[in-house]
Length: 489
Image 1: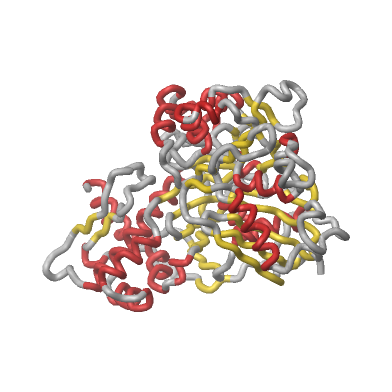
Image 2: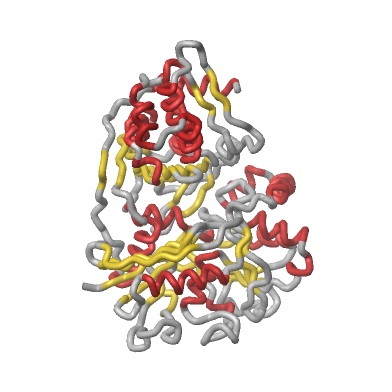
């Protein structure tokens, strides 16, 4: 058995899966927590990665490892490889004004064409603009800009500040992959290269790609973009006890959603809908997208294809909030919801509890509609909450369809989809075959698949286990009722 490791360095924690490269069967697991917040010292990620590797039994018997990480986080390094400030994460919204400034200066349509996305506060390009405008002393000292998975892979290979790493601060060794690079806002999925003019427009300084000799020492370093099956280096033997006698290859890594698609084995025709704290709808597409409305972000995936994605701010917490209001647990919540008829007797929840990103309504609030003496029941409130959440996600699905991306199957993942009522209502709201994979760490599994890929040169075809395929019972009137209310709200 050849073992590979996949890492998921997410917002909340670091997870490590050790799997059989041939089958994807999980052999060992490890986990360590990250601090809460939207502004985090990357040292916490490095410490958690080491703890999670130790918890998973180490890397001494592992042939390769890849790191997947939360997208968009900004890691600023100086010439000595030291982190200049805490990383601003995807969920830090202070750069919303910077996003608006970039759109005003360059134009939404041109930005979408050049980098695949219209900038919002989550993208790295807006964060570097914010630092330029608000922290000029730090901006002047920046020697390299990396993303969370780039920085962790660099540290894993033995690089970093001289007093913290065996190989020292060689910034030319920074690497990333196309999926994570595409979430910066200054790398183009259309051309497969950085748009250095966009970076300069955002940060006010010129950048170059790591490893290029021209302008070395004067321009900011951006990580070199590795191909999906590239070997970027090896884990340094000094870092982990027992690893001195082995060579552990390091893969390109990936952004979290792209790694999740790899872990699910998603292919063209598949759309992944993830119901977590936020909701994500992303597809594997053979063609890049450029949506000037900003509904779809046109990212690249980790396999060589593309990953159009739409995001909603409101997802699983809609259900926990309503269940708390009704004073029930999730099992009782499902029972109530399934006791109501499709359409909830006309009751509609517009679920913008935290504003909304798709559609872009940051100041919106949630509201119930269609309440009457007869329709105001616990059952209808419960079902309307599920319908409202899924109808919001259906907006992202429809936007992806409208972009020309084929949709044949929906893979429904996330903790909330283990609720039977959510599965059944999904089969009524989404006009596609809905499949619920067995719960698992699909981001870490995707990183492990990439690690297996670099060993053989062939993307692994691991079996995907599923727990449910809700009945195909599409009810277009549910979505129509929701849109009539949401559009007028």
